[in-house]
Length: 382
Image (tube, rainbow, N blue to C red; front, side, top):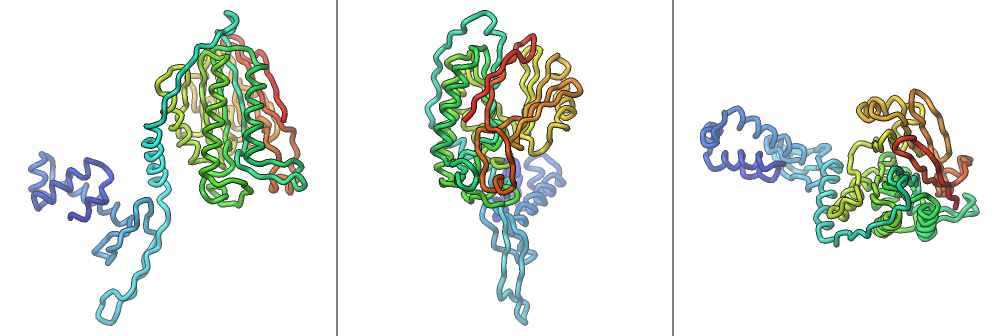
């Protein structure tokens, strides 16, 4: 029974298993804890299932548990003529949910030592500025991607993309009006890769990159911090939205958590932390919905927005949904909402170039009024 302690996933499970070890039987443990024998029995079954997933089930001759973060896919056992184990093969694969939780816990611990942000109050130029919200949308930036100009039309690497990011943010801040709120909408696929291997996280398609993943993390954090600081010069508050894309599914979550902790001591920066890839922001009579586009295209977003955010839909008169993923512009208005698919500042990679995809490159700041919806916009080009 002592062996089961390492497979307990909650403190409650550990309490019941410890009581069982101390008192020797399920009935005695139940009496000591003031619960039913069935409760103890249920906990034991749950923990044994946890153990079996990790490869520990002595009744089936499985005595070598997989390391934490992995689950057993199957075992093959060779017995001798006397029924003794001669050889055993244990096949495992990554427990992605547990690994992601371990990753987030590690990020939380590391981030606890990061110095917290200090804010300088901006100067809004007019009374009307207090009713404005600027949406800075940079979608499909693919930081870390490498492209060869002779093949794809434009050279692109991490150094080029970081410099372009800074210049684009500078132009967007200078050309858009001062506003009460600025939304930094990194609308998915901000990172080209999501792991140490240069492959897509779901289909494991090979990707062209020029830096190792730890280097990419450093550039991404530095770039986002720079953008928020620049926006705070002309906005009373910045909302940081790092949307999930199909290239950076896991990185989205640890980036959200990292910046939530970095800005936790100020109300001037709000970091949206949300596991669902659909996001909503309400500004007076204006509703904004953001989704990368890998789960739903422009035709579906109108009904999804109404279904997922009925309260915000009912509160507002001007509704907008923003998406990307396909790297070219589409604007359609239907069923009470305008859906816009955005361009990207990033050039084509080898895959897109070989596929013959053609689209203009750009990013925009759209200004929304709390009582009138969209009132102006700024577009920047490479």
